[in-house]
View 1: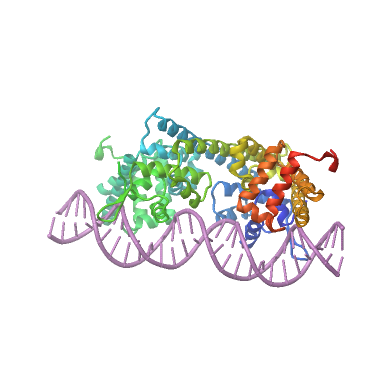
View 2 (view 1 turned 30 degrees about the vertical axis):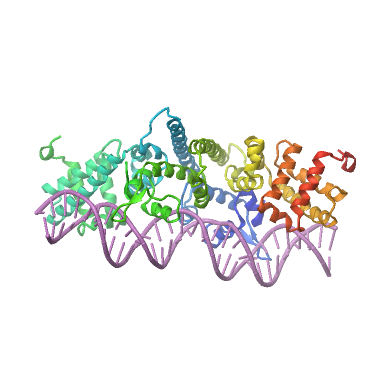
Length: 260
Length: 260
DNA sequence: GCTTGACCTTGACGTTGCGTAAAGGTGTAA
DNA sequence: TTACACCTTTACGCAACGTCAAGGTCAAGC
């Protein structure tokens, strides 16, 4: 079955402008153009558009979507299974919002009290995205989605005070890292202190700590330019230094240094 | 409890830029500014931001949100109840998407076949919005949400061919209206034909027809500039003419003119 | 008191993903 | 042939911020 622009737009519930724009940016090109120059879409494009709409619904920007669906190694069925998982997550977030509004209604009717931070349960998607950015999909692939998902859920429940502490600890990690990095000894006292502070910082969002995950995250800081740039502001080579300190820290945890 | 920009941003999961932007456009102004010019937000602003975020989540543009929440007659608890209803609708749409992806997975695994239009179930929010625009909240308030909700659901199941017929019928209404309007007699043969065609057009989206609803919709065409402008393109005063024709049609349906 | 870093302000430019409109060509039924 | 629905490309504009720069303020530490 073939479709021109309007037919496909109606079928999919998008605008004709959207389809032309998607063609323009190379996201969804028609199967062919007829002699009049009309775009003609077929079954392959139908399936591709469906994938695009799922990704769009899940919040990915079009450039990312383009990279994914145009990859020769793109696996349709696997992507669908991923969509399903993510849609179920979205449903959970929506449930949080529904619960929030119901709680707020009760509070408005004087049946309960509500803390300020509770009023925004379910809205903190940005925090989740930041967290996702922090941990990235490498960690997901290596240690499974559960780790990150639980981390997200935990973050959502963090109070304002805790969040402040979390940020202060992050600062302390950075400060100590800068100092230790200048001294240049990852195995030294300050290097190991940095690693321990980093572990403590992780405890705010990780449901369970493991040395492997800690070391993996540190490695990612080196491999990923975003993190390298973030840490290297403190001291040149700081990301690599932190990785070294954490690798040492996780290999032989010096109980005697900090006590447990 | 008071918050500066960053504190509130963290609490609510939005950016500081968002809060400043909301102040700038008059959507959410701080309680006051301190001597340094810092924005200071309090409990009232907390509650208002929560409402804003609910409306935002439900897809309203900021200008609309501003009009709503800044209205002196704004009723917080009533708005919350409305949010709840709409969030439940959103959840149903999400369920459609989840069902869609599961069906697509089955089809990909060869367990079932899937029609092209089925692949987009749940994505047609734009069609729903258009339909909402058509019927508007006046109809909702007058005849209850069920009428419109069922209409939306019905539209979602419309096939491509049916949709095309729907649009052709809409065109025919407009053509006949133009002709009848020129003749200037709402009770005349062409006026009544227009009303009948209009009724037939409604049958595509209304689960059940009632004369009262039909007349009410026609009245809304006159009262609402958007619709008046749409119809008056065919002939000056066409919206009013159509209203008159429909009022007559629904009061005394001339069976002998068209047969039933 | 000075320094430093976190946080604040305003102003401004840019981005993404389209919506809208204009000008002109194509397809098809009457 | 005509009229209307649909197609094309081009282009401008917009909403809702993200990002950055320049400069002021706050508070803890030395």
